[in-house]
Length: 288
Image (cartoon, rainbow, N blue to C red; front, side, top):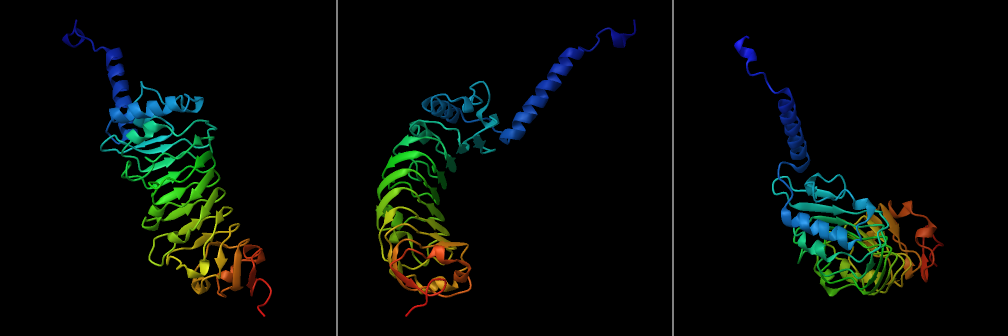
């Protein structure tokens, strides 16, 4: 028998080795090379348990590296730390899980359009989660006040049942997008304004905020302002006339005086100014 056939290759072992290599490479491609951090894996499984082990999260399985889970998780490719947590529109009814506080490398959290209830915990902010810049909890059933620690750059809390005033800590916070519409919030929101602030969009519609709009300075970068359905009084700032508004709605407040006239304010019809105490000028009736 020829010598090359004395020890024939084990084709099955070779195939198995190749398959294993492919699986390893596929996992590495999804995770960026680093396996899921063990403490983050434990925290995620605790989050799943606190949410009632919903079927939507059945893919969160302890036998699979969490950075390879097909839904809800993104990881840092170098460290294996979990950076993004998403459980969107799954009709999950539960309080916000305390175990999220252990995911200390999170940059974004999106739990929008579930049925989360209870209060917003204090750890949802940069004090406990130093890299967190995006917090989306809109469309839930959350109650109570906004915690003073929720000073994340993009804060989206629309359509809950939140009460109380905006925390004083928000006056010095750096925001890019604040969305608080359709809650039961009260008090003075003027602290969010300021010419040099980075606030690009502000949604306060259908609350009970009360402040003098004529005394605020619009942030220079702001191109979305929706404050309809509150108790805002005073006048519309003159600088609104020159702003390149993408969206602008001050209807159903207690505003008075002439509407600033400019190229972009002319884009908006009467419904964006209606229902105020004595606003006048295009697109409403002329001032007398």
